[in-house]
Image (cartoon, rainbow, N blue to C red; front, top):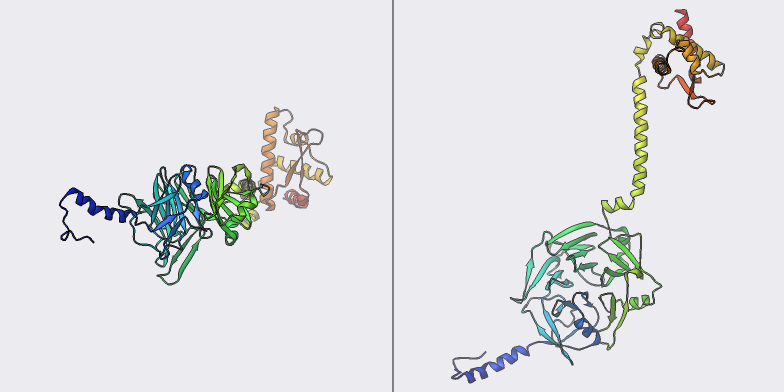
Length: 471
């Protein structure tokens, strides 16, 4: 520390000379350096709108001093409209990458001192602002959303409606951020808090965070397909169409916008190349996938189209809306059957209500007072013809009822009323829910009907007529 009491500058020149060493110390205080490689240069020079955030699992962007506590930490690259940043996993440290013709150099942006509270957190940029979500530290998995404050060079907390504990990595979580919509999707989360016993609750639900609203929204339960394959599933990288993952040696695309899981065709010539580089650095610039290792002097790339993916029957999550959509035709079929059954039962019970009579009421019926003479005469002809296996025509019915000379419309109405009344009286008398007199379509004239006594009632009708004659 400079003692200003011992050395008092007398001139402006002496004052400048005093502060030159201090400025040099501040400028050279950066405790890390970076090696220029083709892969890193490609990331820096690419457009921020088309570049999706690469994560570095193997190899390092920055070489810290040998005694640095950050030597084992992963590096995460973030791009804004003007700059490229590196955030050190598990810390609040932010470095800006600057590129010249011959080299890449670093400027540390933050002045944070704490670390170890956000290990395996998910970093992303939205509207030229750096964010950091979740992570493990201080014996718990947290769901804090942190926003970088360039003015204070510190991280500020963002207040959300819910805390969802997330970790980010190849196997730690399936997380995707859609830059255009500002929605961050998470396929599952972990309620782990070692400060409260050995509390560990794995929640297999799909949520999305609206960064502009600062709210989490639940989409549904993780699909059975992903649940059954979680142990063999890990993230590859984010793509323009969703999250690229490897699951049981298959390359899949999680299309969150449409809740679909697509499969990369194994016939593509670069299929095995992607699988072999699954633990290297992978990132998209538009529809070009770049992959390689930071310490190598070469990178590989392939052009991928969404048309290279095949839609599967599997979904990312399920809820009542998608269950209804997936089983639409089956539900319509079941509904139609239910309607038919309902109509049948309604008709059946209506008939039962019309024909039902208590045993007491039935026992008190007097056949002679119930049936009219015309009805008895008609019943005798119907019974006689039925016993002879002959159907009774409408002309015979009209003859018995004396309707031959009446208008046709009046004949139909009177005939129908008499037959309906006779059937109801027979059902009450015989205590039956079935019609005793049934009609059969005329074989010669399909527009007309014939009538007869149901065979199961001929004996009972015969007894009824005999009792009527004896009275």
